Image (tube, rainbow over all chains, first blue to last red; front, side, top):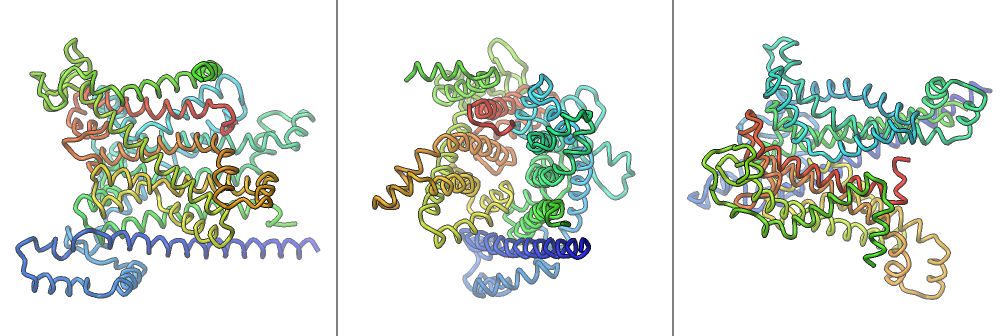
Length: 326
Length: 275
């Protein structure tokens, strides 16, 4: 009996996850349409721009044909989308290289930066969030509230500037420019990325800690916690054994949301430290108006964002005991 | 009215008072700053570049030997003005659409909400980068881009509020009374969601200040000869190695503005977010 109902619970969860996955795909498709349309609104003609003012009408027409710009918009959209999906998002105009090649040199750097930041930020944020929730209303909690509230509103470049002033100008511990190349060993690499990671962490931790605290406190007000406290369970045990299993879904949700912030924050941080990642590549694409490259970068960022949101929702579904087993 | 405002300000916790003071200070600077500037904005007045603090130049000189304080006073006007206008535009557009959705029934609500959900799933910095690449970054366009980027966030919050209010008895009564949809949206629903909307306006303002100064810092925002606070950080970036005041001052200025707004919003009664 129990087995059967837990199986049907599993099935319901799987159906929910499947639906959620399908809706993510649909959203991604709509996002791709939006980005494509905005990129097409570019005033002026790419072919005209590439050839300059002195080009004859015939030359422009020939280049337009070569670039496929004379095809109707929906045909170009479909060919761009199939290109994206099959890993060939076109030719970068400025680098004169396939976009896929340009991106493949940058993407691993960005992923590594994000992974290292998450590795540092998550434990710290959990400690701060849970700590201040346990101290709710107390002095530590209020102080942490002001600190995290301020940190979420501080621009990344201020944090980066102060970090450079302290660690590379005054103390001379770290280089002020982040280098990343394949012939570096790990200790050099870590020294190089220490400050970008520190900067990203400061901002992400503040956000994560606030959301973690809110999730834990939401559980603290429930009757079952009061019950546990009244029967004399130690506070740490209440948090770890009673609250955490129930708060884990909102906390994972908070982690995913804050990590999605890394995507935007990386734009500034990678640029200020000259880190060869995807975000600084995207900024270059904007400056040089390299639309195929820009579109591909934007799609990667949006996909990453949607994956994080998907993870958050799937955890919520799996952590819901009403769906997991009855 | 002033007396009641003072009374409310006194009731704020200390962090809220600090926030309020910072906000009032920056509003004052944005309005009167250029008048108070000791030197003309573009004038080369110091002999040395990246001078430290001195009696003649309170915040030192920048990478061309211009007075940092004067440039900061005028840069604040761009930052505060652009962000306030963009936040106002984003909030009013988002709220107007949300009210339309709330009184328009599922036929309006469904597609509109679906569309906004889609826009929300494009990270705002990435979205604005695409928009800047496509349209460029004149002051007017920056305002529109920043506003457009934050409409979906405001819409989501305003719609949640409006849909809840639309279920209330007094709104039902107004419907039965035969009031039109426009009247219901403006006279019945809107007045009751104004407080949370004001808090949301403050949040949008902070986001937009950070977005615009971030864009300017990347060289994609306010273009020379105009300069907002983000541009000031960018143009003095070569002074980073010397720890120049010219780079720190505008960055700290942005931070005090955004932190001030955040502290003020958090301290307002009824904003039980952290509790």
